[in-house]
Length: 186
Image: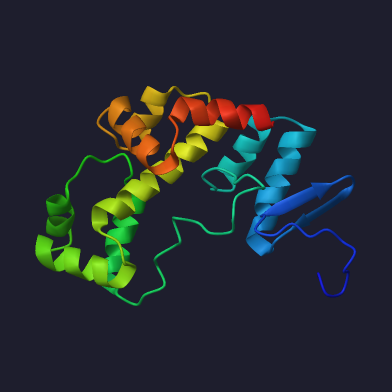
């Protein structure tokens, strides 16, 4: 597009862009995010959330999000056991089970599962789960009115303090500061 239309201002690393009466999306699935954003813009966020729920989409992604998705990242390997572990972790973010519980559920030793996971994803199981939980927490902060304590519980953290400490370490601000900053953008 940049080569064909050199005078056009192309925004990189965006899911979709609204420019006056022109709406563009980065690709096929980002078109779903764009459609939900249009429903939110033209009607209201509650209707967009209901449509997303009906379509079995967790939460729509904001236009400024990159196309990367933590729920899909690190799955470009061909190890069935690691895939299974990733699916269990993704589908049970709120679960308080340990790595030992996960290994037991998969009929593997802790050590073997940990080694496989690290070899195929480049991350430890705990780091991967933390990233999943933080991504889910970000979506809840952006698209719900839940308190930080409620979000922490929904993401599987023992308490809001544990969630806030990890958030601060990874993102450089508290969840409350993040939400206020994002609200100012709107």
